[in-house]
Amino acid sequence: MTGPALDHAKITWLENGRFYLNGFSNRIYDELSLETIQIQHVERIPNSQQTVFAAAEFDLGLDFLACWQNWMAQRPEPGNVLHFISHQQHPLSRNDLKRAVSLWPQLAEFSEQLVQFWPPAVGGLHRLVFADGQVRLTLHFGPQGDAWHDLSKPDPQPACRPDSVVIIGAGIAGACLARNLAERGVPVQILDSLTPGQAASGNKQGALYAKLGVDYSPQTALALSALLFAERFYQQFQAHQSSNGHAPFFHATGLLQLAFNDQEQQRQQKFLARNYYPTGVLYPVTAQQATDLVGVTVHRGGLWFPQGGWLAPSQLCQTLVQHPLITIHPHCKVTGLVQSDGLWQISARQSNASAGSDKLFNLKSDQLVICAGAQTLELFPQAWLAPGQRLRLKPIRGQVSHLPAAAITSPNAVICGSRYLNPQHDGIAVTGATFDLRDENPLPTTASHQENLTELDRLIPGVVNINHPAVADEILQGRVAFRCTTHDYQPVAGAVSTQSINTNAGAWMFTGLGSKGLTYAPLLAEYLADRMCRQPAALPDALAHRLRVERVLQQE
Image (cartoon, rainbow, N blue to C red; front, side, top):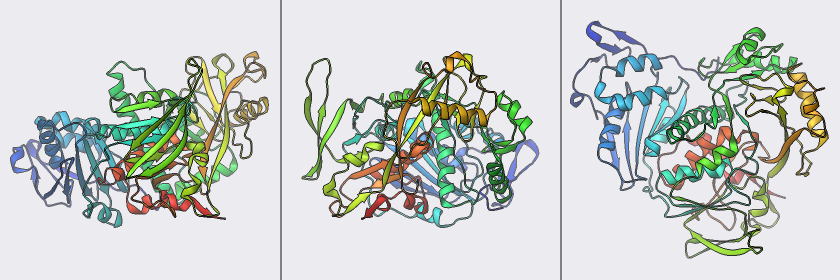
């Protein structure tokens, strides 16, 4: 077994609610006042815009909880951030943590949130965000390897968030980044060719999942980190929005990755033989167990992701950009990107159908981020590239089909395989998507609908009534979007560094998320905002290295 699961720390419970953590300092914990416990062995690194605490061992998290309590009592200015960095070789289970911290009811307001979003016992870095972004906890689980040393070493550059940022693109990448920066106190302006969440992120439904590799590689570690962070992010953001009366956009139904043919079944068997994952992340199910979970008959087993589900991407993007520090400029075509006197000058043409004429305007900002998905190729200035150099990005057409509820037996959880099928919502279940490498047709086609229906019938025989009038060729509706992928199908999130643009110029790129934008966008936005604000990074160097812009630059 190569991982990534870790053994939990063990607690020995004594009389009168006292306990100690096995293998630690043999210290007995009881209801001692926090004054004898808090802020021990913690290094404080202050800054006007952030305060960083680094603790060698997390233990029960009492130091962190006390810091959090004190921080909020000081009523920090909006955008100021408390970072707390710590390590734990063997993390507590959620149940043990809940029981242990209950001894300190004066911390309940904070400990209950920590318990709720406590990560599974998976090795690597875990970033937890609280208090609408004003408190960030970075935990390293497992042996103290390079990832912990990268995190705990001091940054030679002081934290300095930008005074202004312009983001080009309001899909899931741009919307997540804009919200993240705004919660750190950074004013953001977004230029979009349409409106938020209307291009590749405009489908009615999208699945939240990751296809993890048979071997636990850095690529798999990045995908898993993104999945775990996204699950926490959507739960927290939705809870906040629901309290303000917004309709839910995340539906945590669980997700079945079906072993839909012999090849996939063999792949999953190898995956299970070589890896050990906590059951809170995934576990294998038989065909009957899978049938019971998803509510429709499937003839093979698979992998069950209990925290998976589906989202309404367009609704999510529109909600993310609703923040006082975010300004949207819709229906804009960017016509120029020039840096002068340390500021980026962005020229744009904004169409206005009602006025019958276009509006020309210019924006200035400290930093610029291209989050334009498939439009990145046409937006990226050729002057930034060396002669003969090009970006190794490619758009891939994907068509989804909208299946009326009357024509299907709707599952109650997401099913993924050669296609995916989401539970019906508002009378429609989305299935797809095609993977058309050399097709630039922006309109839905009958051939793509037929491909989706045929593949879905193979995946889950009988789930769709292909003879029902509601799925007839001339009636069936759908949507086409163009995913942006890289040559190695790994995303890009980093500073632009080319022949004419250096890494300190304040130009960034965030794209190439392919069909996994809903999974990757929250964590990569967190990481990119860390870098842009010069704050502790949510990713270790080994994983961040995989996101560099330089790797998608190719000399022809």
